Length: 428
Ligand code: NAP
Ligand code: HSE
Image (cartoon, rainbow, N blue to C red; front, side, top):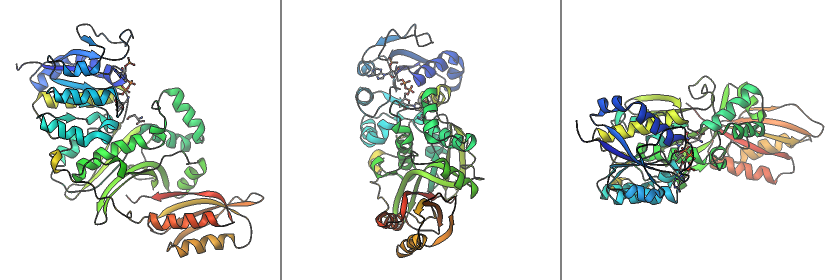
């Protein structure tokens, strides 16, 4: 058998411990599949005394992950600490500089520094693998870079933050409000240390950045993503959407058109009977559309010890087999700067607001939409209180720019009692 593949693992939290467990449990299976023993040589975390529920005997302990990354008795540096800056970045750079391949689950690091790290890796003849960084246990990076390599990708989209999908589906199934479910997620430990990464859409946007780069051969461009979280979604929106045959999802879409590359992560209405509409709880789904394959749908657990460690092991096994694919599927110096679309592709929009219940209020809203070139498909006034009237409008296809113009004009009127909630209706 070929020489063992030697790992240094930095980060022994949820994912790191999961990786250690699989390597200990499946040592023979991994060796049979790859033709090499996969061995952990050294590990690192902040607290050397913490009981992690798994034996670390036989592994050297490094207090400093950079020192671990530089050890000359490891072949692969496995970065499972997280964060776009600090230890994760320093140690990844040190590993590449000292001739190690890197496996990471860190979407934040690659969304922000992916281009520079990919260039550094290629200059050193090394690779960075990151299957676990996008949609946890779903092997979507492998699907895009390998199985779908023969396709021009027309659209890639998905629900890639399990916490948001858990909140949105429980709002509908339990009739609970956003705040109650946010508190429930905090108690269950579902939220990132900074919860805005989840509910603000940033974590999912990091993941979309990486998918878009592979799909379109562009440099990872997190700043080019239009990001909006789920914090403003109310039970009323969930109910109204459901009445019309839709579900609300935090949906990421990357789509290239003659206008440029459109990348957005925002709550959208999707048909309730579509695969995305039927996605429940913390599960993730990625939909890829290619000019040859048409549409494929990948569904699975997007987080948690087992699923995420499974993806990390997939990368380690590929390296053990000698598979070396450039970080974003093609050489880093061939990735083009993304040309962001100046205006997004038109779509119908859902608008919910409340108007002061006085003569001419509805007419003013209709006139403002008309002046912005927006045609109304459906409009409903319902559930009056003493002084205000909730109003629901579904527009025909329009651009976000036209909608923004109308929303600004609505703000200036004296009839709008509730800042409108405006959600794109995504056609699938
Ligand atoms: P975690 O449970 O918070 O564990 C982080 C680990 O990193 C801990 O063991 C911590 O040490 C160690 N660490 C942090 N800073 C360090 C430093 N400066 N030096 C040495 N060790 C340090 O995180 P996780 O959930 O396993 O996530 C790890 C990575 O996987 C992140 O990039 C995350 O985004 C990604 N990911 C996670 C999931 C998931 O389901 N959890 C899914 C997909 C991707 P101590 O234990 O001593 O504090
Ligand atoms: N916070 C993320 C989620 C974890 O809820 O999907 C996986 O990246």
